[in-house]
Image 1 (tube, rainbow, N blue to C red):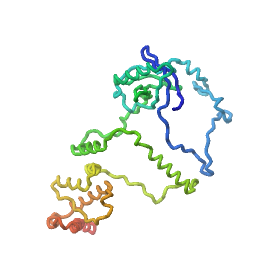
Image 2 (tube, rainbow, N blue to C red):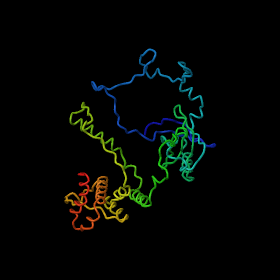
Image 3 (cartoon, one colour):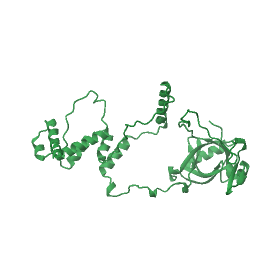
Image 4 (cartoon, one colour):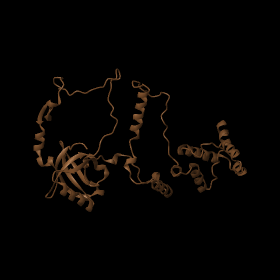
Length: 346
């Protein structure tokens, strides 16, 4: 665990709990550096004096507030502390609210709170009280030079402080085009029932250990591959012949839901045809393959194929459909396509 980044106390009523603040998260993103593409040298940034152009060391850097153009008020760390000593040294609990009342949209950065010297018993008292009443503490806290709204809640035996976003930091979603309840977006009972079944079928216990950054792993594998192939200085450019993936216009929602539930979209299309008292779409003759049992077809392709077959079946004359028998599926498919070819020729 890293060293504490803040020492102070939790305060509510006359209770005073000495605590230390520790970061609860770490950033495991890709640590990429900027390079000069001409010689692959790393690019650095300098802290320099804008008046002289000379570089400035950290020891010579202080903070200041520009109160008018070109004029500054110098503020040292002691000045910032003296502005409100109590605010910079306490987590001041303002109220206790039900945890469910604070939307997840407001939560920002989590921190661990550990008891300071002599604070074990009162720390445990607050923790056990929060668990018993099922509430979280809403507090003010100053970290560095910014005051945060924060929520204190329990994770196991640890009190966790999550900084919260202020209400004016949440952007209004009113300008977004969110679908409402109208005829265009009306959801049928059948669609809702299938969607619920899909969600229930995919439900499982929360086990965060099973989730990890697969994209980072893929990029690291690519880096290792380029190192082994001695292509560390090779700049990979986009393939000019590669075409972007085409957007899919989702129309048959029922077929997609049934496909997600492990059913074939073709069967869903056939079921819809039966509901409309129309004959089912003809099935194309297909050669059996050895991998059929192990390999499941992609839902989108099957959905598109089912739609084409349904259109072809509707285009076929009813007289031709009545004369054909179910045993002659290949001939039936040919008959279904014949009117289409005649229209193109015309």
